[in-house]
Image (cartoon, rainbow, N blue to C red):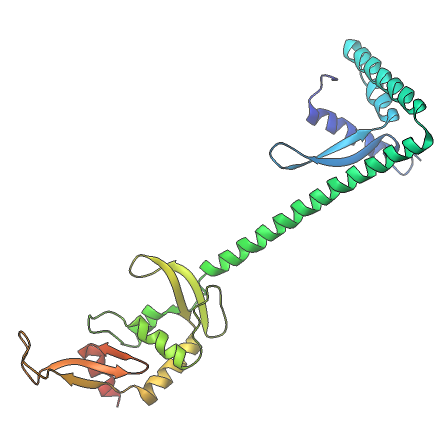
Length: 262
């Protein structure tokens, strides 16, 4: 209405507020400008000012030329119209209007608090999601642990499943994404097969417990072919096996390595 950019008008009003609230002025800016906020079309909170009649007077007095005259005439007419309407109302109706305004203001405040709570909730959820994808420095996946401990399956790949089985035996295994303690860190990541999935990473403390377990318990058996089978003859070595909750197969490299340790 006054032909001024909103940002420029806000800048000017903030300047007026700073002058009015100077300790030496003995004035109160709230009698002129009431600070507030609103939610814009992009659902962003923006600051604003509600102008009292004295605030409108001040803004008008700072304007010159045709724009100043038109603004002054418009707001004076509006206030005069409001005064006439209020004069027609009973004291009870005026009080009811004030109550209604307070109720609306309270609704706005609740809406803002709700928006803040939702934002805080979303931030917390993002933090939790980040934890689920964050690998703790120094921890090793079951694939890496199996490779380092020379535990290879009969297809010559690190035996990740066996590592997780040992961890279960030691009661340090967990498959819930986000779980983290001194032994494990369960995250979502791309596996060595290239697919996204749950991966358990083990701390050095967990790996040392596994080493102790293997030293005391890990003894593989050799299974032989009972009959002639394709290129294999009866009595040939079929596989190297360790039986825990189920049967795990290993390659000759693993068998030879642990045979030397005994």
